[in-house]
Length: 407
Image 1 (cartoon, rainbow, N blue to C red):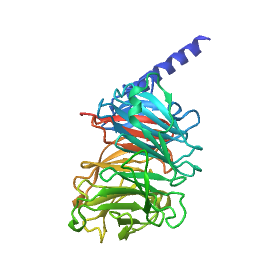
Image 2: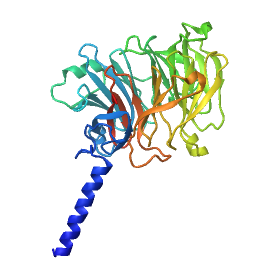
Image 3: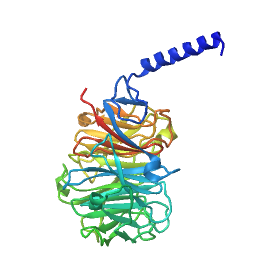
């Protein structure tokens, strides 16, 4: 190499070092390693108020060529350990995140049949219930989570403790832990329910009981034992269904006689996807999955006023800072945690929702490439661990563990 080439190489190296230092002096050698959020980045990931605590790549969760979907969490009340339950195309991974900087994949529960890009999981007592969409005769896998305590050589390949075959496939599974009932939605079950919510008694978790259903396709739902402002319905079991073109409200207290209380649509419906009650059960925070693509808006969140369950109203619309598509979202206290695909996880302050004011107060972007309007990035988020750690399931990358910083 001649002197001119040496000088050029040295100059380029110095420039790259300066550029790297200016952009982010906290970027670790491993871009997925634990990293504090400083100057708008945690490693390579755009952020605001959230640090990266830990990460597990998708190939360790689902194998080579897999992708991620839903996630949920379980806290072992005996050991206080926290576990991420991560759904992949090939099955479910159970990850001990008690030391988030060193997450451990305890084991994998493989799919009951074929791979599926839509796999969902929920927990009742110490059992996980797993469904998959368009997956032949998958049914509902049931797994005793206390088995995670006794794995000496992880990762272990698990088999289910039971399988419920009251349907072949389902888009999602919803559980009201107060009543001990599951609601399978978007199922393959034929008439008379045709994809409507199926009622399943889980009070004996390994031997679920078919308890009826309600007709008409439902994509997602939340079911609560109601204790809100509409005192007429207090103590009743209420289902809020996100049903493609509308929200429906059912009284499902009597499983043999579910009652439709009301329904509501809204302007520029794309695909009524999923939503969650505020903790006082006054408002319902709703996501539409296709409106950003179809109308070109920024990320839109619709707030329903459910003060009167028999007469729901639109309270307001919130538009986020990007054009990303919103997906699953959950309320904890006065925050709404939204998985917003290419824009990652967004935290919205809903303290002043009554006065039609919502503010974004934090985010962690698991898809640093862009915030475009497509189906990559954060699928779901689980914000309910006692530690304050939050997990994000990313379709392309895997499991992220983040936590709000103290700045």
